[in-house]
Length: 415
Image (cartoon, rainbow, N blue to C red; front, side, top):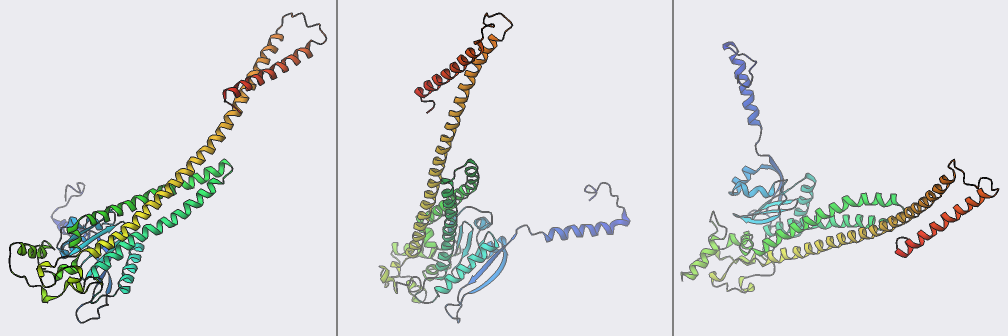
């Protein structure tokens, strides 16, 4: 304390002031949260005894430390949901899916989800889309699982953001390009080019964002184990679902027992895992597996794979469309450059003509200077000497100018 305040001397009588200052400093330090709290919307799926399509929505704030403790995952896994995180990924962790696609971020569990976004406006739009998606596809027997519906809503929101942004940006860019092609004067060209430059930068950023989403979905599709781990509802129904470290440990245990020739492993209440997972299948045999043998049952991620493939195709189309707009911008810029080159050529042609004319006038001035010297030339007394000399000078300068221009035309310097 004395080092922090060297000019303040405290004796025994000021001990109370010292204690009060220290308590104030401790209270201020305790009031500062080292980890900022995240604003999010929490979705909770149906509970036993409630209607199957009931989903509660609650706005909440939570710190990353509390969230990591609740999910029982390392804190570093939650870097994806930071507001400033630009890395896109869909990863499976212990009984949860961590999704980060641009500004769309979510943590999805079997019967609950936490959706986040970079801004409050984005968060409200994402919440409305997830809620609408859950309302249009109610839960229950034979329906798409809750976790997969939330996953689809989040991916759809990210793709729709790119599509809407691209549509608005494309319309604005095409309008500027149309005006740019019809511009007649240099001032209008310069103004339109200044408008086009930030739009081109925004298009490049949007194209990079779409490619980042494309990469994230491609990585998710290329990892079968992650796709299996994303089937939270099926994992809860198959095998030993209580493993704390590996969400697929129960399924792998069943496979291992089969390879070792072990006996049958009972499934939970003999429930058919596929009756709740996908709308088009009522039993495991409908998916091509023998429902009588529990070892033949396995995680089926075809629904999630088809979902991601559908949005992957849309992203590829949007990326191609953004590339087409960029090519249109480049073509228009090249055309404008050609127009400016023609204008520059005209200016250079005029400058060349002026330079030749100046050179010929300089030759005439040279002759005039010679006759203007204070020396006798024996023509001072001639009555028509001035007019004759002036006429010869003008004719000579004109002939010289025409000869230079004709030579330049033969060389292709001027038209």
